[in-house]
Length: 302
Length: 330
Image 1 (cartoon, rainbow over the protein chains, first blue to last red):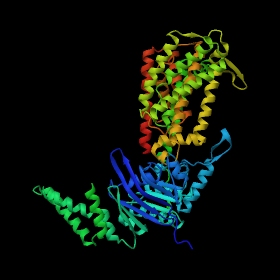
Image 2: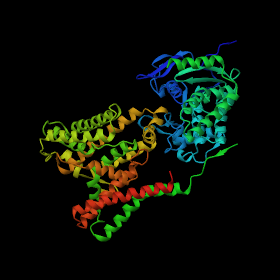
Image 3: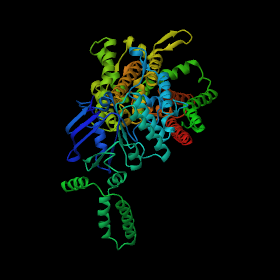
Image 4: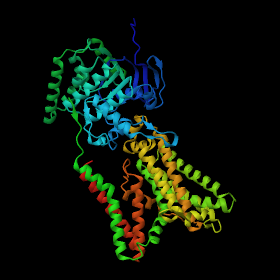
Protein backbone atom coordinates (compact mmCIF):
# COMPACT_ATOMS: atom_id res chain seq x y z
CA UNK A 1 0.00 0.00 0.00
CA UNK A 2 1.21 3.46 -0.85
CA UNK A 3 1.11 5.78 2.09
CA UNK A 4 2.98 8.59 0.44
CA UNK A 5 1.30 10.03 -2.60
CA UNK A 6 3.56 11.86 -5.02
CA UNK A 7 2.57 15.53 -5.16
CA UNK A 8 1.40 16.75 -8.56
CA UNK A 9 3.27 19.97 -7.92
CA UNK A 10 5.78 20.82 -5.26
CA UNK A 11 7.76 24.01 -4.79
CA UNK A 12 10.54 24.21 -2.21
CA UNK A 13 11.80 27.55 -0.93
CA UNK A 14 10.93 29.38 -4.13
CA UNK A 15 11.96 33.02 -4.38
CA UNK A 16 11.35 35.48 -7.18
CA UNK A 17 12.98 38.88 -7.50
CA UNK A 18 12.16 41.58 -10.00
CA UNK A 19 15.20 43.81 -9.81
CA UNK A 20 15.33 44.86 -6.18
CA UNK A 21 11.70 43.94 -5.54
CA UNK A 22 11.20 40.66 -3.67
CA UNK A 23 7.93 39.26 -5.01
CA UNK A 24 8.27 35.84 -3.41
CA UNK A 25 10.53 34.79 -0.58
CA UNK A 26 11.13 31.15 0.33
CA UNK A 27 7.65 29.93 -0.48
CA UNK A 28 7.00 26.20 -0.22
CA UNK A 29 3.81 24.47 -1.24
CA UNK A 30 2.65 21.02 -2.32
CA UNK A 31 -0.50 20.09 -4.16
CA UNK A 32 -1.68 16.50 -4.50
CA UNK A 33 -3.79 14.93 -7.24
CA UNK A 34 -7.49 15.08 -6.49
CA UNK A 35 -7.39 17.98 -4.07
CA UNK A 36 -8.29 21.64 -4.26
CA UNK A 37 -5.63 23.89 -2.81
CA UNK A 38 -6.89 27.41 -2.19
CA UNK A 39 -4.32 30.14 -2.50
CA UNK A 40 -5.36 33.12 -0.41
CA UNK A 41 -3.85 36.50 0.22
CA UNK A 42 -4.31 40.22 -0.14
CA UNK A 43 -3.36 42.24 -3.21
CA UNK A 44 0.40 42.24 -3.61
CA UNK A 45 0.80 39.16 -1.44
CA UNK A 46 2.50 37.35 -4.32
CA UNK A 47 -0.35 35.13 -5.53
CA UNK A 48 0.01 36.20 -9.14
CA UNK A 49 3.78 35.83 -9.11
CA UNK A 50 3.47 32.37 -7.60
CA UNK A 51 1.00 31.08 -10.17
CA UNK A 52 2.92 32.68 -13.02
CA UNK A 53 5.99 30.86 -11.77
CA UNK A 54 4.06 27.59 -11.59
CA UNK A 55 2.69 28.05 -15.10
CA UNK A 56 6.03 28.80 -16.75
CA UNK A 57 5.62 32.55 -17.31
CA UNK A 58 8.30 33.46 -14.75
CA UNK A 59 11.40 31.51 -13.85
CA UNK A 60 12.01 31.29 -10.11
CA UNK A 61 15.12 33.21 -8.99
CA UNK A 62 15.79 30.61 -6.32
CA UNK A 63 14.40 27.33 -5.10
CA UNK A 64 13.19 24.04 -6.52
CA UNK A 65 10.14 23.26 -8.60
CA UNK A 66 9.05 19.62 -8.87
CA UNK A 67 6.32 18.16 -11.03
CA UNK A 68 5.34 14.62 -10.04
CA UNK A 69 8.57 14.36 -8.09
CA UNK A 70 10.85 15.45 -10.93
CA UNK A 71 12.65 18.80 -10.98
CA UNK A 72 11.53 20.98 -13.89
CA UNK A 73 12.80 24.13 -15.55
CA UNK A 74 10.12 25.80 -17.65
CA UNK A 75 11.03 28.35 -20.29
CA UNK A 76 7.52 29.16 -21.46
CA UNK A 77 3.86 28.48 -20.72
CA UNK A 78 4.06 25.88 -23.50
CA UNK A 79 6.55 23.84 -21.47
CA UNK A 80 4.23 23.86 -18.47
CA UNK A 81 1.24 22.91 -20.64
CA UNK A 82 3.22 20.00 -22.06
CA UNK A 83 3.72 18.73 -18.49
CA UNK A 84 -0.02 18.93 -17.88
CA UNK A 85 -0.09 22.21 -15.98
CA UNK A 86 -2.95 24.34 -17.33
CA UNK A 87 -3.71 27.82 -16.07
CA UNK A 88 -6.99 29.66 -16.51
CA UNK A 89 -6.49 33.39 -16.15
CA UNK A 90 -9.32 35.66 -15.16
CA UNK A 91 -9.05 38.12 -18.04
CA UNK A 92 -6.69 36.31 -20.36
CA UNK A 93 -8.45 32.98 -20.73
CA UNK A 94 -9.96 33.66 -24.16
CA UNK A 95 -9.52 35.78 -27.26
CA UNK A 96 -12.95 37.38 -27.38
CA UNK A 97 -12.82 38.13 -31.13
CA UNK A 98 -12.41 34.44 -31.97
CA UNK A 99 -14.96 31.64 -32.06
CA UNK A 100 -15.58 29.16 -29.27
CA UNK A 101 -14.06 26.23 -31.13
CA UNK A 102 -10.98 28.21 -32.16
CA UNK A 103 -10.48 29.34 -28.57
CA UNK A 104 -11.02 25.82 -27.29
CA UNK A 105 -8.09 24.56 -29.33
CA UNK A 106 -5.90 27.66 -29.20
CA UNK A 107 -2.26 26.58 -29.14
CA UNK A 108 -3.14 22.89 -29.64
CA UNK A 109 -5.17 22.89 -32.83
CA UNK A 110 -6.15 19.63 -34.49
CA UNK A 111 -4.92 19.36 -38.08
CA UNK A 112 -5.67 17.21 -41.06
CA UNK A 113 -3.68 16.68 -44.22
CA UNK A 114 0.04 16.36 -44.61
CA UNK A 115 3.13 18.53 -44.96
CA UNK A 116 2.43 21.89 -46.57
CA UNK A 117 -1.21 20.90 -46.97
CA UNK A 118 -1.72 20.46 -43.24
CA UNK A 119 -4.64 22.57 -42.19
CA UNK A 120 -6.72 23.37 -39.16
CA UNK A 121 -9.49 20.80 -38.85
CA UNK A 122 -12.38 23.13 -38.08
CA UNK A 123 -15.03 20.44 -38.25
CA UNK A 124 -13.29 18.25 -35.71
CA UNK A 125 -12.65 21.29 -33.51
CA UNK A 126 -16.29 22.36 -33.55
CA UNK A 127 -17.48 18.84 -32.94
CA UNK A 128 -15.16 18.20 -29.98
CA UNK A 129 -15.77 21.63 -28.46
CA UNK A 130 -19.52 21.13 -28.56
CA UNK A 131 -19.25 17.63 -27.12
CA UNK A 132 -16.92 18.61 -24.28
CA UNK A 133 -19.12 21.53 -23.34
CA UNK A 134 -22.16 19.26 -23.36
CA UNK A 135 -20.35 16.99 -20.88
CA UNK A 136 -20.13 19.96 -18.55
CA UNK A 137 -23.77 20.75 -19.07
CA UNK A 138 -23.34 23.72 -21.37
CA UNK A 139 -25.26 23.64 -24.62
CA UNK A 140 -23.48 25.50 -27.39
CA UNK A 141 -25.70 26.11 -30.33
CA UNK A 142 -23.06 27.55 -32.60
CA UNK A 143 -19.40 26.73 -31.84
CA UNK A 144 -18.52 29.36 -34.45
CA UNK A 145 -19.90 32.28 -32.47
CA UNK A 146 -17.31 34.66 -31.04
CA UNK A 147 -16.43 34.21 -27.39
CA UNK A 148 -17.07 37.93 -26.90
CA UNK A 149 -20.81 37.19 -27.01
CA UNK A 150 -20.61 34.82 -24.02
CA UNK A 151 -20.99 35.66 -20.35
CA UNK A 152 -18.02 35.65 -17.98
CA UNK A 153 -19.10 32.39 -16.36
CA UNK A 154 -19.44 30.66 -19.71
CA UNK A 155 -15.97 31.81 -20.69
CA UNK A 156 -14.46 30.45 -17.48
CA UNK A 157 -16.34 27.20 -18.00
CA UNK A 158 -15.00 26.82 -21.53
CA UNK A 159 -11.49 27.47 -20.28
CA UNK A 160 -11.85 24.80 -17.59
CA UNK A 161 -13.41 22.33 -20.03
CA UNK A 162 -10.50 22.97 -22.38
CA UNK A 163 -7.91 22.29 -19.69
CA UNK A 164 -9.66 19.08 -18.65
CA UNK A 165 -10.00 17.92 -22.26
CA UNK A 166 -6.27 18.39 -22.90
CA UNK A 167 -5.49 16.10 -19.99
CA UNK A 168 -4.41 18.67 -17.42
CA UNK A 169 -2.97 17.07 -14.29
CA UNK A 170 -2.80 20.40 -12.56
CA UNK A 171 -5.41 23.11 -13.04
CA UNK A 172 -4.52 26.59 -11.84
CA UNK A 173 -7.49 28.94 -11.62
CA UNK A 174 -6.78 32.63 -11.19
CA UNK A 175 -9.78 34.30 -9.53
CA UNK A 176 -12.22 32.34 -11.69
CA UNK A 177 -15.26 33.53 -9.74
CA UNK A 178 -14.34 37.07 -8.77
CA UNK A 179 -16.12 38.80 -11.64
CA UNK A 180 -19.16 36.54 -11.60
CA UNK A 181 -22.64 36.67 -10.16
CA UNK A 182 -23.75 34.19 -7.50
CA UNK A 183 -25.33 31.68 -9.87
CA UNK A 184 -22.52 31.72 -12.41
CA UNK A 185 -19.92 31.39 -9.67
CA UNK A 186 -21.82 28.34 -8.44
CA UNK A 187 -21.62 26.79 -11.91
CA UNK A 188 -17.88 27.39 -12.10
CA UNK A 189 -17.41 25.88 -8.61
CA UNK A 190 -19.27 22.81 -9.80
CA UNK A 191 -16.75 22.38 -12.62
CA UNK A 192 -13.92 22.75 -10.13
CA UNK A 193 -15.46 19.90 -8.12
CA UNK A 194 -15.79 17.83 -11.30
CA UNK A 195 -12.14 18.40 -12.12
CA UNK A 196 -11.14 17.32 -8.61
CA UNK A 197 -13.28 14.18 -8.93
CA UNK A 198 -11.27 13.28 -12.03
CA UNK A 199 -8.11 13.31 -9.94
CA UNK A 200 -6.84 16.65 -11.11
CA UNK A 201 -4.84 18.76 -8.69
CA UNK A 202 -6.55 22.16 -8.54
CA UNK A 203 -4.97 25.40 -7.34
CA UNK A 204 -7.74 27.89 -6.75
CA UNK A 205 -6.96 31.55 -6.22
CA UNK A 206 -9.71 33.68 -4.79
CA UNK A 207 -10.58 36.63 -2.60
CA UNK A 208 -13.95 35.26 -1.70
CA UNK A 209 -14.07 33.07 1.41
CA UNK A 210 -17.56 31.89 0.53
CA UNK A 211 -16.19 30.40 -2.67
CA UNK A 212 -12.94 29.14 -1.18
CA UNK A 213 -14.14 27.40 1.93
CA UNK A 214 -16.73 24.99 0.52
CA UNK A 215 -14.53 23.83 -2.34
CA UNK A 216 -11.08 23.91 -0.75
CA UNK A 217 -9.38 20.90 0.84
CA UNK A 218 -6.33 22.81 1.99
CA UNK A 219 -5.52 26.49 2.22
CA UNK A 220 -2.23 28.29 1.74
CA UNK A 221 -2.13 31.87 2.86
CA UNK A 222 0.38 34.32 1.39
CA UNK A 223 1.41 37.60 2.91
CA UNK A 224 3.94 39.99 1.39
CA UNK A 225 5.60 37.28 -0.63
CA UNK A 226 5.86 34.78 2.23
CA UNK A 227 3.58 31.98 3.38
CA UNK A 228 1.69 32.12 6.63
CA UNK A 229 1.40 28.37 6.30
CA UNK A 230 -0.82 25.70 4.79
CA UNK A 231 -3.84 24.43 6.67
CA UNK A 232 -6.25 21.60 6.12
CA UNK A 233 -9.92 22.29 6.38
CA UNK A 234 -9.94 20.52 9.77
CA UNK A 235 -7.30 22.89 11.09
CA UNK A 236 -8.95 26.06 9.90
CA UNK A 237 -12.48 27.16 10.57
CA UNK A 238 -14.36 29.28 8.08
CA UNK A 239 -14.25 32.22 10.49
CA UNK A 240 -10.53 31.97 10.99
CA UNK A 241 -10.05 31.93 7.29
CA UNK A 242 -12.25 34.98 6.81
CA UNK A 243 -10.26 36.76 9.45
CA UNK A 244 -6.97 35.94 7.76
CA UNK A 245 -8.25 36.99 4.37
CA UNK A 246 -9.81 40.24 5.40
CA UNK A 247 -6.74 41.22 7.38
CA UNK A 248 -8.21 42.05 10.81
CA UNK A 249 -4.82 43.27 12.01
CA UNK A 250 -4.56 45.82 9.22
CA UNK A 251 -7.99 47.17 10.04
CA UNK A 252 -6.84 47.82 13.60
CA UNK A 253 -3.88 49.85 12.33
CA UNK A 254 -6.04 51.72 9.87
CA UNK A 255 -8.43 52.65 12.66
CA UNK A 256 -5.58 54.09 14.74
CA UNK A 257 -4.24 56.10 11.84
CA UNK A 258 -7.65 57.46 10.96
CA UNK A 259 -8.26 58.54 14.55
CA UNK A 260 -5.53 61.13 14.05
CA UNK A 261 -7.75 62.93 11.53
CA UNK A 262 -11.07 62.43 13.26
CA UNK A 263 -11.67 66.18 13.55
CA UNK A 264 -13.04 65.94 10.04
CA UNK A 265 -16.59 64.65 10.22
CA UNK A 266 -16.34 62.60 7.03
CA UNK A 267 -13.31 60.80 8.38
CA UNK A 268 -15.02 60.29 11.72
CA UNK A 269 -17.72 58.44 9.84
CA UNK A 270 -15.11 56.33 8.13
CA UNK A 271 -13.53 55.48 11.51
CA UNK A 272 -16.89 54.32 12.69
CA UNK A 273 -17.24 52.08 9.68
CA UNK A 274 -13.82 50.58 10.22
CA UNK A 275 -14.66 49.99 13.87
CA UNK A 276 -17.84 48.20 12.93
CA UNK A 277 -16.00 46.05 10.45
CA UNK A 278 -13.38 45.21 13.06
CA UNK A 279 -16.02 44.36 15.63
CA UNK A 280 -17.52 41.96 13.11
CA UNK A 281 -14.22 40.28 12.62
CA UNK A 282 -13.40 40.20 16.34
CA UNK A 283 -16.60 38.32 17.03
CA UNK A 284 -15.11 35.35 15.25
CA UNK A 285 -12.39 33.24 16.79
CA UNK A 286 -9.02 34.96 17.06
CA UNK A 287 -6.17 33.83 14.89
CA UNK A 288 -4.13 30.79 15.82
CA UNK A 289 -1.13 31.80 17.93
CA UNK A 290 1.38 30.37 15.46
CA UNK A 291 -0.19 32.32 12.63
CA UNK A 292 -0.18 35.52 14.68
CA UNK A 293 3.48 34.97 15.44
CA UNK A 294 4.40 34.25 11.80
CA UNK A 295 2.46 37.29 10.66
CA UNK A 296 4.27 39.47 13.17
CA UNK A 297 7.60 38.05 12.03
CA UNK A 298 6.88 38.93 8.43
CA UNK A 299 5.93 42.45 9.36
CA UNK A 300 9.07 42.93 11.47
CA UNK A 301 11.34 41.62 8.75
CA UNK A 302 10.11 44.25 6.28
CA UNK B 1 -29.17 21.78 -15.54
CA UNK B 2 -28.06 23.37 -18.74
CA UNK B 3 -27.12 26.94 -19.34
CA UNK B 4 -27.84 28.26 -22.78
CA UNK B 5 -25.36 30.31 -24.64
CA UNK B 6 -26.97 33.52 -25.83
CA UNK B 7 -28.15 33.60 -29.42
CA UNK B 8 -26.35 35.85 -31.82
CA UNK B 9 -28.35 39.04 -31.88
CA UNK B 10 -29.63 40.39 -35.18
CA UNK B 11 -27.29 43.34 -34.81
CA UNK B 12 -24.25 41.08 -34.92
CA UNK B 13 -25.55 39.22 -37.97
CA UNK B 14 -26.51 42.35 -39.91
CA UNK B 15 -23.30 44.09 -38.86
CA UNK B 16 -21.20 41.17 -40.03
CA UNK B 17 -22.93 41.09 -43.40
CA UNK B 18 -22.51 44.83 -43.86
CA UNK B 19 -18.88 44.69 -42.85
CA UNK B 20 -18.15 41.95 -45.36
CA UNK B 21 -20.20 43.55 -48.10
CA UNK B 22 -19.66 47.27 -47.68
CA UNK B 23 -16.50 47.56 -49.79
CA UNK B 24 -18.08 45.48 -52.49
CA UNK B 25 -21.21 47.62 -52.49
CA UNK B 26 -19.18 50.83 -52.73
CA UNK B 27 -16.97 49.28 -55.42
CA UNK B 28 -19.93 48.27 -57.57
CA UNK B 29 -21.53 51.66 -57.01
CA UNK B 30 -18.39 53.48 -58.10
CA UNK B 31 -17.98 51.29 -61.16
CA UNK B 32 -21.60 51.87 -62.18
CA UNK B 33 -21.13 55.61 -61.80
CA UNK B 34 -17.90 55.70 -63.81
CA UNK B 35 -19.42 53.49 -66.49
CA UNK B 36 -22.32 55.91 -66.83
CA UNK B 37 -19.92 58.85 -67.16
CA UNK B 38 -17.32 57.39 -69.49
CA UNK B 39 -17.67 54.95 -72.37
CA UNK B 40 -14.14 53.79 -71.96
CA UNK B 41 -14.45 52.69 -68.34
CA UNK B 42 -16.11 49.34 -68.96
CA UNK B 43 -13.92 48.38 -71.88
CA UNK B 44 -12.12 45.21 -70.94
CA UNK B 45 -8.82 46.88 -71.81
CA UNK B 46 -9.43 49.47 -69.14
CA UNK B 47 -10.56 46.97 -66.52
CA UNK B 48 -7.51 44.78 -67.14
CA UNK B 49 -5.42 47.92 -66.96
CA UNK B 50 -6.77 48.71 -63.50
CA UNK B 51 -5.80 45.25 -62.29
CA UNK B 52 -2.38 45.51 -63.90
CA UNK B 53 -1.71 48.95 -62.44
CA UNK B 54 -2.57 47.72 -58.98
CA UNK B 55 -0.96 44.27 -58.96
CA UNK B 56 2.06 45.47 -56.98
CA UNK B 57 -0.11 47.36 -54.50
CA UNK B 58 -2.25 44.23 -54.01
CA UNK B 59 0.76 42.17 -53.06
CA UNK B 60 2.11 44.83 -50.70
CA UNK B 61 -1.37 45.20 -49.19
CA UNK B 62 -1.43 41.47 -48.41
CA UNK B 63 1.78 41.84 -46.38
CA UNK B 64 0.45 44.97 -44.70
CA UNK B 65 -2.73 43.09 -43.77
CA UNK B 66 -0.70 40.38 -42.07
CA UNK B 67 1.10 42.91 -39.89
CA UNK B 68 -2.15 44.75 -39.10
CA UNK B 69 -3.82 41.49 -38.10
CA UNK B 70 -1.23 41.01 -35.35
CA UNK B 71 -1.94 44.58 -34.22
CA UNK B 72 1.26 45.83 -35.84
CA UNK B 73 2.03 47.86 -38.95
CA UNK B 74 4.78 47.95 -41.57
CA UNK B 75 5.59 51.44 -42.83
CA UNK B 76 8.75 50.27 -44.58
CA UNK B 77 7.00 48.45 -47.46
CA UNK B 78 7.38 51.28 -50.00
CA UNK B 79 11.09 51.67 -49.31
CA UNK B 80 11.66 47.93 -49.29
CA UNK B 81 9.82 47.69 -52.63
CA UNK B 82 12.09 50.36 -54.15
CA UNK B 83 15.22 48.77 -52.69
CA UNK B 84 14.17 45.35 -53.96
CA UNK B 85 13.55 46.73 -57.43
CA UNK B 86 16.96 48.39 -57.50
CA UNK B 87 18.89 45.40 -56.16
CA UNK B 88 17.14 42.86 -58.37
CA UNK B 89 17.82 45.00 -61.45
CA UNK B 90 21.37 45.78 -60.36
CA UNK B 91 22.23 42.12 -59.78
CA UNK B 92 21.27 41.33 -63.36
CA UNK B 93 22.45 44.46 -65.16
CA UNK B 94 25.62 45.26 -63.18
CA UNK B 95 26.68 41.89 -61.76
CA UNK B 96 25.57 39.55 -64.49
CA UNK B 97 23.49 37.26 -62.29
CA UNK B 98 20.67 35.28 -63.85
CA UNK B 99 17.08 36.46 -63.43
CA UNK B 100 16.20 33.49 -61.19
CA UNK B 101 19.12 34.03 -58.82
CA UNK B 102 18.34 37.73 -58.66
CA UNK B 103 14.70 37.08 -57.72
CA UNK B 104 15.59 34.56 -55.01
CA UNK B 105 18.26 36.83 -53.52
CA UNK B 106 15.92 39.83 -53.57
CA UNK B 107 13.06 37.93 -51.94
CA UNK B 108 15.48 36.71 -49.26
CA UNK B 109 16.66 40.28 -48.74
CA UNK B 110 13.07 41.46 -48.31
CA UNK B 111 12.44 38.68 -45.81
CA UNK B 112 15.61 39.61 -43.93
CA UNK B 113 14.61 43.29 -43.70
CA UNK B 114 11.21 42.16 -42.42
CA UNK B 115 12.93 39.99 -39.81
CA UNK B 116 14.99 43.01 -38.79
CA UNK B 117 11.74 44.95 -38.32
CA UNK B 118 10.37 42.08 -36.26
CA UNK B 119 13.54 41.89 -34.18
CA UNK B 120 13.42 45.61 -33.40
CA UNK B 121 9.79 45.25 -32.37
CA UNK B 122 10.10 42.04 -30.35
CA UNK B 123 13.53 42.29 -28.72
CA UNK B 124 14.14 46.00 -29.14
CA UNK B 125 10.66 46.58 -27.71
CA UNK B 126 10.06 49.41 -30.19
CA UNK B 127 6.48 50.16 -31.22
CA UNK B 128 5.91 48.72 -34.74
CA UNK B 129 5.13 52.23 -36.00
CA UNK B 130 8.56 53.53 -34.92
CA UNK B 131 10.63 50.51 -35.91
CA UNK B 132 9.20 50.37 -39.42
CA UNK B 133 9.26 54.16 -39.78
CA UNK B 134 12.99 53.98 -39.15
CA UNK B 135 13.24 51.21 -41.74
CA UNK B 136 11.28 53.39 -44.19
CA UNK B 137 14.06 55.99 -43.98
CA UNK B 138 16.90 53.48 -43.99
CA UNK B 139 15.46 51.54 -46.93
CA UNK B 140 15.00 54.62 -49.07
CA UNK B 141 18.48 55.83 -48.18
CA UNK B 142 19.99 52.47 -49.13
CA UNK B 143 18.12 52.56 -52.44
CA UNK B 144 19.48 56.00 -53.29
CA UNK B 145 22.95 54.91 -52.20
CA UNK B 146 22.85 51.77 -54.31
CA UNK B 147 21.46 53.45 -57.43
CA UNK B 148 23.40 56.67 -56.89
CA UNK B 149 20.09 58.36 -57.49
CA UNK B 150 19.80 57.12 -61.07
CA UNK B 151 17.35 54.61 -62.49
CA UNK B 152 18.67 51.19 -63.54
CA UNK B 153 17.32 50.40 -66.99
CA UNK B 154 16.02 46.92 -67.76
CA UNK B 155 15.80 47.45 -71.52
CA UNK B 156 16.54 44.15 -73.17
CA UNK B 157 16.10 42.05 -70.01
CA UNK B 158 12.92 40.53 -71.39
CA UNK B 159 12.77 37.74 -68.86
CA UNK B 160 12.30 40.37 -66.13
CA UNK B 161 10.03 42.84 -67.94
CA UNK B 162 7.77 39.98 -69.02
CA UNK B 163 6.39 40.06 -65.44
CA UNK B 164 5.45 43.70 -65.84
CA UNK B 165 3.92 43.87 -69.29
CA UNK B 166 3.65 40.30 -70.47
CA UNK B 167 0.44 38.36 -71.06
CA UNK B 168 -0.35 34.71 -71.05
CA UNK B 169 -3.30 33.25 -72.86
CA UNK B 170 -5.62 31.41 -70.54
CA UNK B 171 -8.73 29.43 -71.39
CA UNK B 172 -11.93 31.44 -70.69
CA UNK B 173 -10.06 34.65 -69.68
CA UNK B 174 -7.96 34.96 -72.84
CA UNK B 175 -5.04 37.37 -72.65
CA UNK B 176 -4.20 37.81 -68.95
CA UNK B 177 -1.35 39.96 -67.58
CA UNK B 178 1.26 37.91 -65.74
CA UNK B 179 1.51 40.47 -62.96
CA UNK B 180 -2.19 40.05 -62.20
CA UNK B 181 -1.77 36.28 -62.04
CA UNK B 182 1.15 36.65 -59.63
CA UNK B 183 -0.93 38.95 -57.43
CA UNK B 184 -3.89 36.57 -57.54
CA UNK B 185 -1.68 33.65 -56.57
CA UNK B 186 -0.31 35.58 -53.58
CA UNK B 187 -3.79 36.62 -52.48
CA UNK B 188 -5.09 33.06 -52.72
CA UNK B 189 -2.17 31.42 -50.96
CA UNK B 190 -2.13 33.88 -48.05
CA UNK B 191 -5.90 33.77 -47.82
CA UNK B 192 -5.87 29.99 -47.42
CA UNK B 193 -3.04 30.17 -44.89
CA UNK B 194 -4.98 32.72 -42.84
CA UNK B 195 -8.30 30.93 -42.85
CA UNK B 196 -7.32 27.28 -42.79
CA UNK B 197 -4.02 26.74 -41.00
CA UNK B 198 -2.82 26.79 -37.40
CA UNK B 199 -0.43 29.57 -38.36
CA UNK B 200 -3.34 31.70 -39.61
CA UNK B 201 -5.32 31.02 -36.46
CA UNK B 202 -2.33 32.05 -34.38
CA UNK B 203 -2.12 35.35 -36.26
CA UNK B 204 -5.72 36.18 -35.38
CA UNK B 205 -5.18 35.04 -31.79
CA UNK B 206 -2.15 37.30 -31.37
CA UNK B 207 -4.09 40.22 -32.83
CA UNK B 208 -7.04 39.50 -30.54
CA UNK B 209 -4.93 39.29 -27.41
CA UNK B 210 -1.22 38.67 -27.57
CA UNK B 211 -0.97 37.80 -23.88
CA UNK B 212 -3.79 35.27 -24.07
CA UNK B 213 -2.19 33.66 -27.10
CA UNK B 214 1.16 33.44 -25.32
CA UNK B 215 -0.40 31.90 -22.23
CA UNK B 216 -2.28 29.37 -24.37
CA UNK B 217 1.05 28.17 -25.74
CA UNK B 218 1.01 29.92 -29.12
CA UNK B 219 4.62 30.50 -30.28
CA UNK B 220 4.04 34.26 -30.39
CA UNK B 221 7.61 35.33 -31.15
CA UNK B 222 7.97 32.93 -34.07
CA UNK B 223 4.62 33.91 -35.59
CA UNK B 224 5.38 37.64 -35.32
CA UNK B 225 8.82 37.22 -36.87
CA UNK B 226 7.38 35.26 -39.79
CA UNK B 227 4.66 37.89 -40.28
CA UNK B 228 7.13 40.79 -40.46
CA UNK B 229 9.46 38.70 -42.62
CA UNK B 230 6.58 37.91 -44.99
CA UNK B 231 5.57 41.55 -45.18
CA UNK B 232 9.14 42.42 -46.18
CA UNK B 233 9.25 39.62 -48.72
CA UNK B 234 5.89 40.56 -50.26
CA UNK B 235 7.05 44.19 -50.44
CA UNK B 236 10.13 42.97 -52.32
CA UNK B 237 7.94 40.97 -54.69
CA UNK B 238 5.68 43.97 -55.27
CA UNK B 239 8.74 46.14 -55.87
CA UNK B 240 10.01 43.76 -58.53
CA UNK B 241 6.64 43.72 -60.32
CA UNK B 242 6.65 47.51 -60.28
CA UNK B 243 10.19 47.55 -61.68
CA UNK B 244 9.22 45.12 -64.41
CA UNK B 245 6.25 47.28 -65.31
CA UNK B 246 8.38 50.44 -65.54
CA UNK B 247 11.20 48.67 -67.46
CA UNK B 248 13.59 50.19 -64.93
CA UNK B 249 14.31 50.38 -61.22
CA UNK B 250 13.49 53.88 -60.06
CA UNK B 251 15.09 55.11 -56.83
CA UNK B 252 11.91 57.07 -56.06
CA UNK B 253 9.55 54.20 -56.87
CA UNK B 254 6.73 53.33 -54.47
CA UNK B 255 7.04 56.50 -52.38
CA UNK B 256 3.94 56.58 -50.16
CA UNK B 257 2.94 53.05 -51.10
CA UNK B 258 2.69 52.13 -47.41
CA UNK B 259 -0.13 54.66 -47.03
CA UNK B 260 -2.02 53.26 -50.03
CA UNK B 261 -1.66 49.77 -48.61
CA UNK B 262 -2.90 50.84 -45.18
CA UNK B 263 -5.81 52.72 -46.77
CA UNK B 264 -6.69 49.66 -48.86
CA UNK B 265 -6.61 47.35 -45.84
CA UNK B 266 -8.67 49.69 -43.67
CA UNK B 267 -11.21 50.20 -46.49
CA UNK B 268 -11.38 46.43 -46.75
CA UNK B 269 -12.34 46.02 -43.10
CA UNK B 270 -8.96 45.22 -41.56
CA UNK B 271 -8.83 46.67 -38.05
CA UNK B 272 -5.85 48.82 -37.10
CA UNK B 273 -6.11 47.27 -33.64
CA UNK B 274 -5.54 43.72 -34.82
CA UNK B 275 -7.43 40.45 -34.99
CA UNK B 276 -10.14 41.52 -37.47
CA UNK B 277 -10.15 41.40 -41.25
CA UNK B 278 -8.95 39.27 -44.11
CA UNK B 279 -6.88 39.45 -47.26
CA UNK B 280 -9.79 39.32 -49.69
CA UNK B 281 -11.36 42.35 -48.05
CA UNK B 282 -8.06 44.24 -48.03
CA UNK B 283 -7.46 43.52 -51.71
CA UNK B 284 -10.99 44.61 -52.55
CA UNK B 285 -10.18 47.82 -50.71
CA UNK B 286 -7.10 48.17 -52.91
CA UNK B 287 -9.22 47.65 -56.01
CA UNK B 288 -11.58 50.33 -54.80
CA UNK B 289 -8.72 52.80 -54.59
CA UNK B 290 -7.53 51.70 -58.04
CA UNK B 291 -11.00 52.02 -59.60
CA UNK B 292 -11.48 55.41 -58.00
CA UNK B 293 -8.25 56.84 -59.38
CA UNK B 294 -8.77 55.25 -62.80
CA UNK B 295 -12.31 56.58 -63.02
CA UNK B 296 -11.28 60.04 -61.92
CA UNK B 297 -8.54 60.03 -64.55
CA UNK B 298 -11.07 59.11 -67.21
CA UNK B 299 -13.28 61.95 -66.01
CA UNK B 300 -10.21 64.19 -66.26
CA UNK B 301 -10.39 65.38 -62.66
CA UNK B 302 -7.44 67.48 -61.55
CA UNK B 303 -4.93 65.43 -59.58
CA UNK B 304 -5.10 67.51 -56.40
CA UNK B 305 -8.88 67.12 -56.43
CA UNK B 306 -8.36 63.36 -56.82
CA UNK B 307 -6.23 63.23 -53.70
CA UNK B 308 -8.88 65.09 -51.72
CA UNK B 309 -11.59 62.72 -52.91
CA UNK B 310 -9.48 59.68 -52.02
CA UNK B 311 -8.94 61.06 -48.53
CA UNK B 312 -12.64 61.72 -48.14
CA UNK B 313 -13.55 58.19 -49.26
CA UNK B 314 -11.20 56.76 -46.65
CA UNK B 315 -12.74 58.84 -43.88
CA UNK B 316 -16.28 57.95 -44.95
CA UNK B 317 -15.47 54.25 -45.17
CA UNK B 318 -13.94 54.19 -41.68
CA UNK B 319 -16.86 56.20 -40.31
CA UNK B 320 -19.29 53.65 -41.76
CA UNK B 321 -17.21 50.90 -40.18
CA UNK B 322 -17.42 52.61 -36.78
CA UNK B 323 -21.19 52.95 -37.12
CA UNK B 324 -21.49 49.25 -37.95
CA UNK B 325 -19.39 48.43 -34.87
CA UNK B 326 -21.72 50.51 -32.73
CA UNK B 327 -24.75 48.69 -34.17
CA UNK B 328 -23.09 45.38 -33.38
CA UNK B 329 -22.29 46.58 -29.91
CA UNK B 330 -19.15 44.44 -29.82
